[in-house]
Length: 341
Image (cartoon, rainbow, N blue to C red):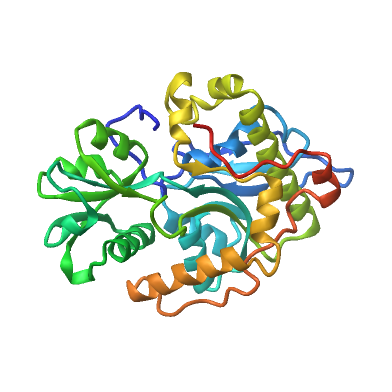
């Protein structure tokens, strides 16, 4: 996927490292200057259509600001204290926020992992069942716990059948220690490890669909903030359409955001489904049966992994309030949730 400019391979939780990025000059209504609506955006590929929309100037007339943080913990604190009105997170992170009583809802599904998250093993291990008694590197995050639980379920193994070894966000560097037999990984680490000869035993196509990257919004926003976030999400879909319709142009603009070259941008989206507005409405519209079932399953896994004390209430967890209206969507062709391959 993306070629980082440093030797450190950042994980999904890593936020953009170039400080505050104003999306546009603040919108100035007749009564004076409005405080910008702030959104925390991680550097994960599926979130970069928001930044591409900014680069294109599509938020010029809106009081929007992208904000970078060093970690998901800082994002949680910023959402809790209203320094952020919205943020890009994984679904498991959103559930943990809700469990901590953060007043948030999922307003946008940016991508769904359908192959981007993988189980890799050293040569000689031919199947997931072959991991019995082996040392498996597992990221010390909720995402790592989810992948580990799904790997065991598909392999027909119990937790005690493998040795789960905690690893950090740079999976490739941790593999170089030489004490692991397999690793649960994604992104650039997965690409580098496969190039080094590791065998792919399974990926998120073979596992239960539990890895979603989403945008969460606070549920106590004022009318102006809600208006700005509708514009933000509209820009996401507009940039996604550009990617589908003019992939070469979009690749040149996305390349610096993904720290790669234009010819490799498509690799950054391998294994990711990118749902459009129509499919987002199908996911999020009440009763949101499929996504709610996935979220409840994720909650159960996090409780079993001692990452949550108890599962939070999720009945009002999803909202379509920020998606384009049905009237606007009728004029846009429906597109299945597919990734560029």
